Length: 387
Image (tube, rainbow, N blue to C red; front, side, top):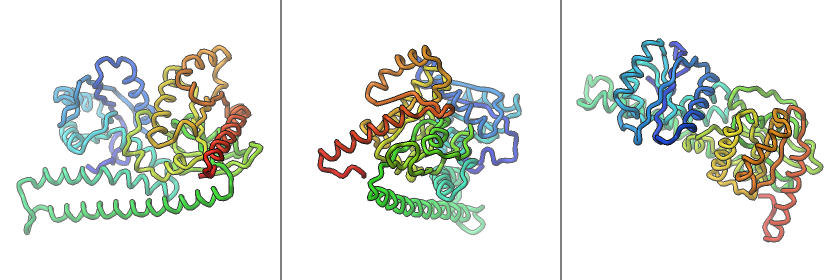
């Protein structure tokens, strides 16, 4: 069964969600992550028919979950006639193969599920290259393990049941992965040259970042006076969108880039290095946080978004926060949310925004003020303002 085949398979789209919870004291967070997994699965076209969670201090090396839980999961697959089991946890090649053999259905983890949604949204060469690269990085070790088990007692020789063919297939995958990586490196170099050329114009770059469905693209449209199509489907923006000027009194390059997801896989971040260049080289990053979730989820998404940006290399000094979709809250709701988020917001300039009501004046003021501060700071250090 090819890695990440999932939704493209001709079988039933009925799916069961599965999670290993390693923190026995976690009575809330795992539910948030599981709900997030279900939203992604539904967006990918799956019908979720059941959920199963096991609590263990350490994952099992063979099945991730315990053997008894695997048998329970097998019964649920037959009961619901499910064609897929989707794990929240990342699965190693060995775990995926072992679980697939027992359950006799397609097994995906969240990494693969995210790639399926990316596939549905990809409409340009750069996005498709990065998606294929992310997939091949996990496909090669899976095929290698699959073949090593199949040909364990046999060595390549005449009529050796296809091990030669396996080596040929694996080598082809590795060569394809290398070619794509080289092409991505070339595109990254070209993008850096474009960034340097923009820098010479003396025009600052402001990137909109944050979780998917936070309203980044809608906010981008308002800020730039654009009317580009937006929808509620996750990850509709895979390749960055650029626009010069907008409502600001000064010239600014605004950039709308790919959204994050809770508990983002580091390898998935690394595979989309072209998108990361915009964040790493931006003069200012606007972290957009949607307010259409319960307040505790908003807090969690803000916290994780800040952690992701820090991991990427975006310093706090280059960030401001936009609490978007503020039209969903009344004055009392805003006050309560401000109190809840204050431990995270105290380090940043922030404001409420509403793309729906085109209420972005306060955000523009903060952006202009912050860009001025950065310009002064760079001049005092004797360094060029635009990177």
